Length: 440
Image (cartoon, rainbow, N blue to C red):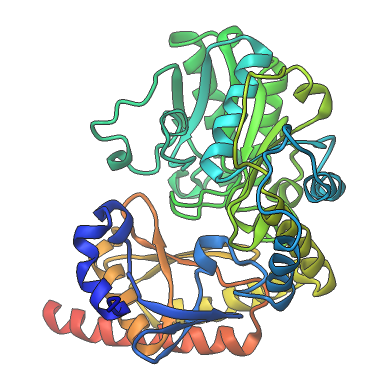
């Protein structure tokens, strides 16, 4: 007799590596639909994670499910190049219409990390320079190349010793500006100084192939930089003939209220990495550049067996169709503003809420110690557990795991936001009651 799901859960510690199976909250589920998960325990959970910013059109959207079925009737596997098929060409054509600037050529892969690897390789090949500059706090993946520019948490690099040839400078953080100063001016001027110091003392700009960054910090804490800061990065890259890479793995496909954060901030990179929301849960990603740049990357310099899978590409097309038909970019903007307005009211009520960081439906809720104002990882985990007990699933981020990540599907309604934040309000109240009783 085959083991039941419950019995398999008991075997999980031996069957799955802890690095795969021990993330928070490890909720056993049997079904997903729309903005909800359905648990093995029989409960219905409101999902404010979107599978970590993947199911932007909601779980198991009917058009997505049908696209999978229809595509499987024709092709299950590429590999692209050995054969060629309609869905990969059609997806590339449609993506070129929504991407900013002249970003119109694609290398399809399977994951965000692979897209980052491709972006770095492309930049190094084209510029024939060895070094890469990234920013502290950014997360770009965990393969060795991507890990060399990932600095959101030191534990990701512990004992791994990723390949060198990278330098890091601080990400924009307006909260560090002196009291009474212009915070935007402060971070822009600091950026200039950081680059100047790096170029004067560690690496010359003529040796740098690319600068890579997340236009909004994701795993690093949902820090939203000023537009002026990103524009200054673009200006510095242009000044020194350095390619600029945007990691839009998490910010892409409507999360910020535009197709891409590049459009939200008005800054176009030379190369972009996209994934997550591109195919509503199927493995698909892309390294994107202009055809002029991409043509300098010859046959054999990069490759893939599974990248651009025909079913995944068909789902990518269906995802774009749903987003357009249901006006999900507009919904991301309006529901994001509504959620932030509700969260600001919660902040007035709860002393453990620090800053609210948001653009579109990419929302971070900082949890602090009420007496010290310092990051409160222990409190955050308790709040997440309490919220889950009530029926809403959030995720975490931040260098100290001190920020609640609120990233619901872009189909979310006002009623669902009210429902989820009501449960968060109750969780915060319960946590603060226990906390204050210990502080008294």
